[in-house]
Length: 243
Length: 394
Image (tube, rainbow over all chains, first blue to last red; front, side, top):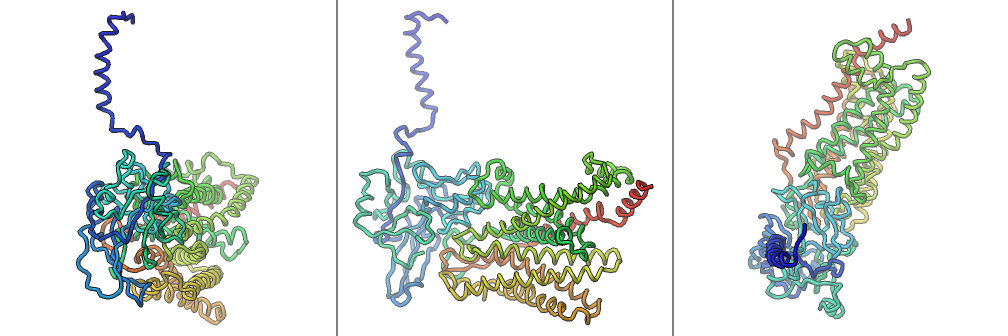
């Protein structure tokens, strides 16, 4: 095709307009996000959690979590002075509507938010027979719902009870750490909704992330450390009675 | 629900279908090991049950993956386990162990063992059956003594490979449970050994049961020597099985590690009937006493009484091993991974995971076996094969 300089000048604005349409049809991208530059975890401050259940509601809304199943939940502990290894624990409805007034007296009460620990050596990833559960380069454990066979071995292997079998999709489901949000520079729905800042998304590869200072100055723990799963949910003020 | 369970745990993930799956594979492994006793270790007394044991193993192996397949949320994706297996997954690798055992061991051995009969039947049978046997012969119609000798030798080697394969088949099922460190009821280094031994026990018991039922159906007298030897092996396998399972419990009780309290509660309350009565008392202790006594006073016990005791013991052991699978699979999910609560499981009647489906899946291998016996082991087929052989010799 022979194009004169004049014809080309006529065509350029039309091409630019067409390109706008092409861009409008592509999904929202995260062009500045490079997964290899991040390593996600979360800081959970037990001393700040008030058990309002806002995180559970926000998560359910953001991720369309089916009723009766939980990507995150909050547990309430009542630890008696003489029975420190046998606390009274409850989590009515995953604390989606908060907690009723406790009738227990004496001892101490506290709330523990829970969700997938996005373990480095995650047992759920290890046992998946088809590799539908996988690690992203930025340290998040995800489930490919188009690939999961629904054998539920991962649900059995998770020591923290974080997975469930999706009642309509018939696949394993769990917290994605709001991956669709964090790749766009947003925080997770649960962190955003927490009124006391008890949950803070942390990028361990970002030297400016306040997590580094926090970890240096506080005693933090992970859940069930004896299982060596490489959990990345760091709890501040976690009582030894919590499992 | 009593105590505290994580909110997602209130639903039982693996139910009766997954109970049946290790039960069926265990029967396969046990039946094959019994068959190999005759082939490799030349236990001549077991000859009457050799072919029956092999067919039993095949019938149960063909049905074994069905409960797994039915249980999947997306059964249409199940082939992905073979096409894109995740190598660190015990479940994915089991698929290959299963295939190896089915294709390389059991089918090969049975085909080599039956090849001569198949060739003769492909000449003597009529109609569709003739075509069926012809197809099964796979074009290998040479029945010369040299060719039969080669069949026998190759079959012997396959059986030799088959023994560790049978151990691997069921040991691996144990590993699928034993490697789950999240669950103290399952996560146990002894689990593969326990599964292997219970498989041997249940497989031999099944062969005793099948042999006696088949003899009864055919109105034929059972070979008492064969039964005595089979039940002798059954007794020895049961002793080892009971010793290992007992050791496991002694260790759990004495070390009383984290989670022991909830397990103790499970044994006393939630699994009382299936564990204490089904598995321990009627599935192990009673057969141990009865079979053990017969080892000492066999000659003084009349044949009829012995036969009845053998039949009762085989049935009790089968029920006991099924109860054991129930205790492992269901028991392991009745308590919370927080180790602070337990729940109750009530099985539905109809539905995919109900009594009806369980019963059907349990009956299916027996139906398959009946068809196989009619095709390969019936008296009519044997007579036809014999007639064909005579004609050949003439």
